[in-house]
Image: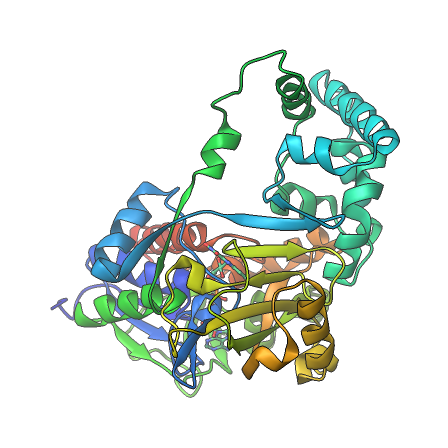
Length: 457
Ligand SMILES: Cc1cc2nc3c(=O)[nH]c(=O)nc-3n(C[C@H](O)[C@H](O)[C@H](O)COP(=O)(O)OP(=O)(O)OC[C@H]3O[C@@H](n4cnc5c(N)ncnc54)[C@H](O)[C@@H]3O)c2cc1C
């Protein structure tokens, strides 16, 4: 048990970031309380049980890139952890390619004349980048053209990016490309061309490493990680308050002092680590944040997502763990049974169909089901009659939108929050960024360490 004189950390949000922050704070000897608005921990990585089966909010698998985080997660998940070789596809011009894209897919998938234009553009982009001639453009369109050349941008990225975000790439910030998109080098493509022409031996390259990456999952899907992490921190003394929405955040001088109906935290001098959406945090401040900060926060938007979670009367629908689609109503379909999810009945499977949307639109309300079933049928995944159950899962804050100019608004908000010495706002929602689970957990660990070592708690 932690002694009552130990520093205290109040954590807002029990997603991967908040839960791992709790784990780290306990290791550092702190007392911890976690406040979560949902009835279960996990945030975007939570699992949802419907009619006897578990559904992820978009198939979620753990990467092992951060050794320390992975070692903790592997220990905590224990025997429920399953190792899964990465196998993901993208449907492009009627064919399935590996995703992330490999150079050879570009070679195989583009008509010859377009291929020459794309390769020339890619090569020029690479030369300019290596000789430092490239000046970063302010928007995603110019950043993508600078990275890949205009022909490949038009052929591959323009329409898909527009459909996915509901915003044309010229109205998205270049920062979106830097943070969200894997870099495809012209050198890779040309090396693949030489390999294809049998002028060089096949490589054991990073492409190969990516192809053979192992992911981590469970027979109940994504939910095992947050469930076991929450259980572990609870058993070590952390209080976890579920169904507890943070509506009000009290502050005085340079300190956050309490939440909701507790203007002063019962734990004198608690530090606060927030993983809830940055915009929500600003709106909840009492006294209210200054007008210019509230206005800046209003400009920061998140893209919502609706998952159509389907139980299908077929043993299997696809070959991969998930496939990206460029011209369908959904942008990705996952089949978690291929990663070891147990499905009931055993001769059925489940599909996780992801669509970006706006709150209250047809996709959000479930009115897009007929179109989704039509597109699944057109892709040969399943027929409408095979779908025996469908459930809607929503995320109002799935993706931060890096609209052009968002950096200035974000900076105003962050500058304002930096005055609070006992606060860190972090994680996917709290830092308005795009981490995977392991990076969000690293952010939580770093923020907890920084707060507890600063002596402010
Ligand atoms: C479709 C999709 C697929 C993904 N797939 C993968 C994957 O395969 N592998 C991977 O590593 N990562 C994946 N990710 C990323 C992963 O979901 C995030 O990195 C991770 O969930 C971020 O954790 P977090 O704790 O920072 O944020 P969140 O998970 O969003 O947690 C924030 C928490 O705060 C709570 N909260 C919000 N407002 C309040 C309030 N007012 N009061 C109290 N609580 C509140 C929320 O309910 C939530 O529990 C995926 C993301 C998406 C959208």
